[in-house]
Length: 246
Length: 188
Image 1 (cartoon, helix red, strand yellow):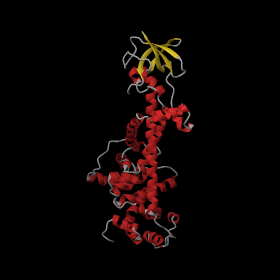
Image 2 (cartoon, rainbow over the protein chains, first blue to last red):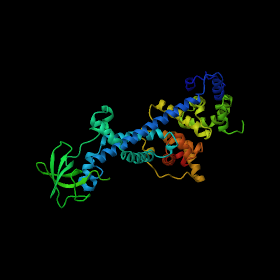
Image 3 (cartoon, rainbow over the protein chains, first blue to last red):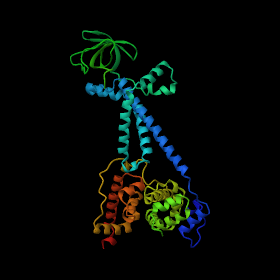
Image 4 (tube, rainbow over the protein chains, first blue to last red):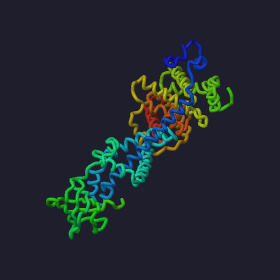
């Protein structure tokens, strides 16, 4: 019997529902929870939403930072080959974390402001867009670069730098190379690759896609997508300067 | 019974006048009993379950925001209690964890009254075949046709998007009409 769960007393013959509930109230067998309980509950939910929002913003900015650092946001300019590199090299773990946090945050805030009236996908897309805009702005600040420097110096506890290392920071696709130009040549340039710290000669041909122009300077950090044609020689399909804007 | 609004009475209960809770019980017990009987489909236990609803409402009265309407608030408590009861009895969820109806946007059918003839036919079918419907379709029908609530109110009570209320009502109507068409008693 349900009424026994709340101990409103035995259901005597003839007593109405109202009488039973009121009797339980008068005898203080049922008490209202204090207002502070609900205030604390709301504060806890708001705090959880705030923490999730902060995490979401940070993870969005980290995904954008990693993508930009690895030159991923410029590779679609190289056509289908660039899209393949993008798909291979995107920081998928960070993106997965972003989606999980977005779903959690969306679920928490649906309790507020009557967001349940909208389909979940609509609130999730709105949350994701806002987080991406905020993350974009945050990724433009020196925050991530500083943290990454500390990670490389080893001055940050390992756990805090986890997002800046593999597997969160994925490797480049096999045919994408990032390096710094050591010297220029009549038909290309010599670059020191970041992965493996080796020297590679990049040959630029007429068909090579050069969205930033064909003039390269010593010291520039560039991404090259190309095919290995000989030992330490690449025939470039496309080259982009990585310090350029998006 | 006083002419005061539910919200004023609830505020008085919040302020410590617990006796006035009896007025709220008087106002809502008939409606909630009808809702329980139609939704849970067990007339015998409906009174016990509704009693639990009032106990929960009293325990949580301080969470009620008197600037809002009392009716959707107590119906929300009733909905939770009834859904838990159905889960307990049939050991299954009413809607799956991934409820695609509530996840994706749908075109919203307007919240308008049916024609008198359609409404009459639906009410006849409702009485005869409501029990055959899945609870997730049964509940919006009860709230819309018997409790005469708007889509927005049903959305607040069931915590589902307004467009999902429209989708479930449309499907529920179609199911009812099909059941009525197959029912020789209703045909005659």
